[in-house]
Length: 564
Image: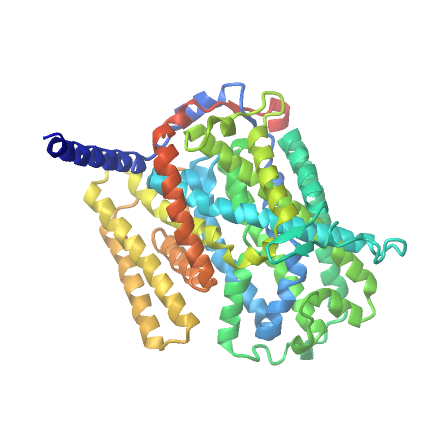
């Protein structure tokens, strides 16, 4: 009798647990009204609004341009030839469209940290936002460790220019001493990470000043390199312009797309911007346009100085100048690489801490991550945690082995942000609430576009018949047309992305197309991490999350004289 009575009880318990999980997972954060934002900002605690529009532009440039501008331009040019310039233009144009989506949402949410995670939480639901956070954060953690090791290696290379130190610095100090395939000891990388973490804990104004100095240094060096190289250009090297055909240019565009990644960092500074609704869109788009101009300049110079087939693999730009007898430029390039890596690392650590801050406030992570130092107005606990994780990874592991599973979080974040623009335009109706069926139909269309992008990417990657690619593209066009015709859209309250929903749909399609070009282990990483994230949410997140937590967020205004 006892057994017979226990089975229904157990089944009922499992059913209620499952329904409880979904009721939590499908919660969303409500849009805060302008009046509520103004009331929240009148409080005197929290993050400090000290970043002006120039700080935001330099923040975006600092995050986007690292040492890669001196390397990836040449390595891609070996395959695409002088047409690498078109590759950078195409990739830049794609990023501009993504940036327009980010700019609209940054203007719509000018008072709260969180970036892609926050937008997803509001437009979709809690579990999707947590998944986006996890994919982004793994990219950030591994990326920070990898950049720190590269920075340590460049610093040692500069030190070895002094005769007394040449060949006298052990590998375990800066270049990395491998112990097997996984372990790799590097002492300098964690030290550099600790120094940058201390700067970030000191205050956003101080860290912004360091970023500004290093970014300006980097930009000046790139401009000097372009100007000096311009006098060594032989225009005959630009012919043939696309020696390996148009496909190599498009393939090159899929590779160099990731050279622009970083402009989204500006969106995570929403709570520390003086005039976020005006300045965030300018910072996002302005930083990206500067990066496009710098990349195009370097591409034209490097392909004009040396025939593309003779470009080196490891340091193509430096080798090109050395071959022309301009060794001093090679030293400048090394200094520029150090400045570039430093700013990329600094901004990366900054963004990570703000994301952890957002999740700590919402209860998806322990509340310690939500604490903001009352004196420095920085999330010190989150910042120290981020620095510790990166230091352990950089000091002990050969993280370069994990490079092929990176960029998953970036492409996932960009795609979801584009979808958020479309969904939030539905939610912005003045008098009527969007019906559940209409929203479900719209989400199905967005998923179909993403699926078509992935299918087209796979077909392109494995040289399938163009007919199948055309069919996949036509299905995506049909889904986009359905979104345009069957849904009603209102204007965004601040900066408005043009061409909604077609432009965001184009973003989703191309981003997932790029996702299909990643190493197959990146796809496995996406699935495995998603499953782990759902497990963490089921055990901890669903019980502690509070989607209305942002209603009690405290802000700190900049002093009036600073805000002017």
